[in-house]
Length: 127
Image (cartoon, rainbow, N blue to C red):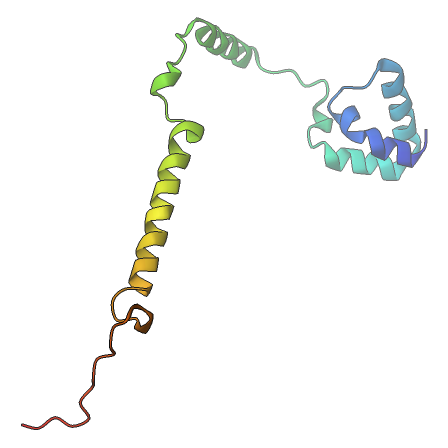
């Protein structure tokens, strides 16, 4: 196996999704190629943890948490906020209202295209 092939399937190797024979080929290449081996170690920060066992207390706690999740009542989705169903219509309404308000403010009374006269500004004020 060459370096290019290893680079192409490196993600699958790190995720443990290779066949046994392909995994053995990659590992044989990594033993012989320092550059690929170093790159694989940097890509997988957990690579040094192979063979490390979790404490028994942690395992028991995780089992209890998973058991609680399995027995928990399902969430009523009709009462939860859904971005797809509620957010976009409200956001679109607000955006349209703001655009209309800005257009009305910009093109309001006093624009000559609507037939209004410009206000005369007195050049001198007499007491």
